[in-house]
Image 1 (cartoon, rainbow, N blue to C red):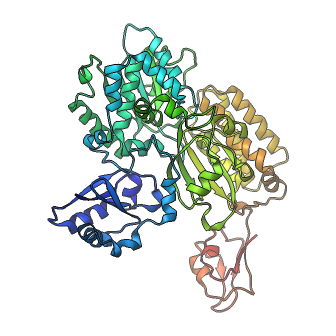
Image 2 (cartoon, rainbow, N blue to C red; image 1 turned 90 degrees about the vertical axis):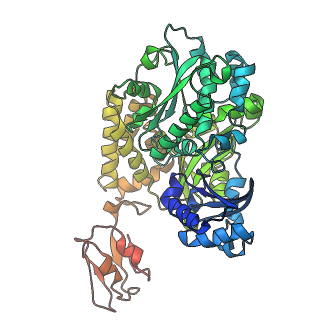
Image 3 (cartoon, helix red, strand yellow; image 1 turned 60 degrees about the horizontal axis):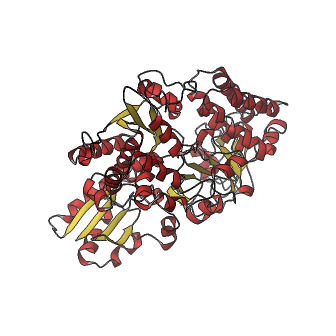
Length: 585
């Protein structure tokens, strides 16, 4: 049967997918030979809304940037199998490379199945791994298979998953054990966890059930950001479906294993991405890290043995049990096995969600999958690991994606944020952007993080405002080292990374800001001066009309002038000038 499937992840919905769905529904009328359905995010956020036409399970056409006006032609094409009238919205061969160059395990079902249908998930071998585990494997055998796979926690630290599971397994308790999923994705520009839950919630449930069986947990908790309403809604439905199919609750699949799952919506504190702060929040306390040891595997949620992994980690588990740990370990590098999901954003042509084997270089990801830099500008750097990550310059783009290799540059893998910057990006401003975030999000428990990040933020603010002082760079470096050494949790310890890496690789930009009161990237407004070139100005008056401060004056068809005392340096005049007459000095 012919099927029309609309991508309805958050990115697709934001681009108008629900309106497209309604328009196609109306165009279908009573055409019973054509089904309409939905799927999640396939990762090509730059092409949304996306509509796929299937004959059974065979993909016939992928249509991109679809509008409501295209609905009639799409329905006609599906009915007649004549696609000539919709070739203008068909995906290009170049954009198809975005997916063809990836290896998808955690994202294997995203954008393919209906996330609200347990039947769709089961048709793709869903819950097959859980059945295998419950019928034929001991908990110790499950942990051994995860050990063989080399799966490391995908939340940022890269700690061996089997080790955490084994520690929780061996912990003794008179109460009950807990398995917790950290879906508190707080990095700016990161949306990996959200996309997996929205697009393939049953893979999270199955992975967690296998983990719960391995450690002996009776209850599973998903701690997810309240800002992810669609993810929560779809996960709630998936949990309900799993219960109805005896995949949650008492005596799962007649195995004697019982386990329940609940969702906890977090209030959006960045620090709750740290596992002990997350536990505090779960217990109804303020989200602040605990001193370790004891580790959560010994005393975690409610002082009971607990294990915490993130969404991507659990999304790999069923695939590993179905295909064997050795198959997963065959991908990647000696130090980092398997694949990694990244949210590729910034100044790239093709932004979205990607998954690649460890060992790929940053250059391959940015240029082969991301399509290179928008506007044919030069790449300047790539920032990895979110606010606690580091900036890697373009001369290190051949660095492989590997926990150790990235750490050697001063960056970290993190949960998977990858922000690409071009030559127009001010690296001092970039460091300030991330310090603004971490200083605001510090829980305040330890002095080094609470005060140290604030002092760094103040210095960076002074520098980008053209008031930098001699010795500021050295003072920043001293503060960075103090915060790294004195902060209690991993988030505080890594907060200085954006500052340290930008000083290390772009010290010349700091010097230009401080010593010359000049921003080489021409991005820091306080150090810019706008002038109109009299020879190029045609007196069209467009710049004067667009100036919010009324700082531009002049007669029609005569050169205009900018009053520097009134200019707010918003750049509106430069953007609208068609003659290149506005100069930024």
